[in-house]
Image: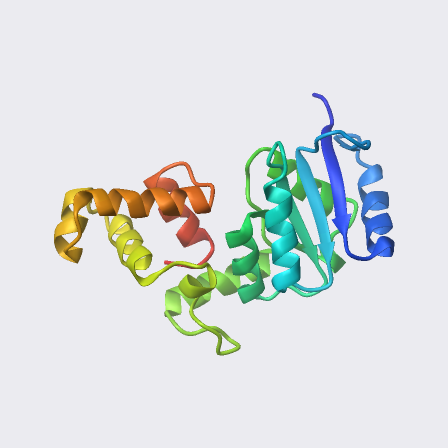
Length: 208
């Protein structure tokens, strides 16, 4: 067994913070960080996924060391999940699922760069993507929820279809440099490695 994964906990409610730390304390593969120590993973515990929570999530991701974030929410609907992933969350759990087995498992997965979602939530995202229908609550489509512009949507769809940069530029009447810039912006914003990773991400969270 290697060194334990250093983990910090962020919560708006001190009771939730204490409960989360208690759940993690029983896992020998993780360790709670001391003051001034950089965590590899931050567990963020919230009641809901709204603008204030997403702002905090982005702030955590921008701290030195850029820790991965596992978001534990009281309520977690598909739209909230998309917003959270777009903001940088690596793992998602509902609070009732964040027990002494699942929470450490999500933390360890995040430390390896893997993304985890509740199975039923992933199924709902994939079914909606396959159906091509609107969001359940009538909110904008998942592309818009993830903060992608119409131009970015068009480019990424053609990338997913296997088109090369010059082909995409010709179809959309852009310059090849513009297409390259758009793809670069998408990969940087969502912390993706390359074009293939961008398509895989879009498929995984129901954007394609």
